[in-house]
Image (cartoon, rainbow, N blue to C red; front, side):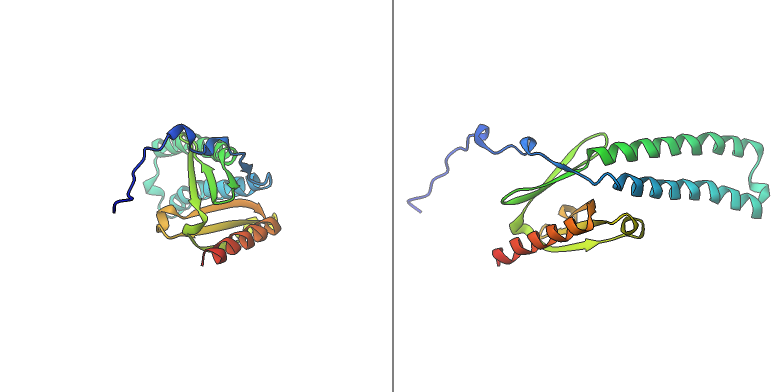
Length: 173
């Protein structure tokens, strides 16, 4: 215990993740996002229509007026926020960690050191697969709240990233 030191760290000398150049998601991924949004909007429209067919007494003229205002406004907001969210997402791989940036109103940046990565998975959704895209899922030792999913990556590139991460995990063992 006689060699114990606890020096103050100069925070101005710490590396800044803000200076990292983030890679944007593949441009085709916006199509996947918009198709998913269109499906949600379709369900929002279809549900009241089906309910009105089977239970017409539930829908008066006032209810249709409210739905006629709320659904289009909600749909527009959903499309706008989805596009903004797509543009703000980005990722970067550095020597010792992976970074993922996302957010619409507030931008969040998650930094995960490779020594905390426990498992890496590659996921292709139905619509993403059609466009040749995949999602990398990175599972960490910190639990599900610190896991990240990086969508909108070309499948071949995603497989290379998975191999890179698996190699980093193997080196840690």
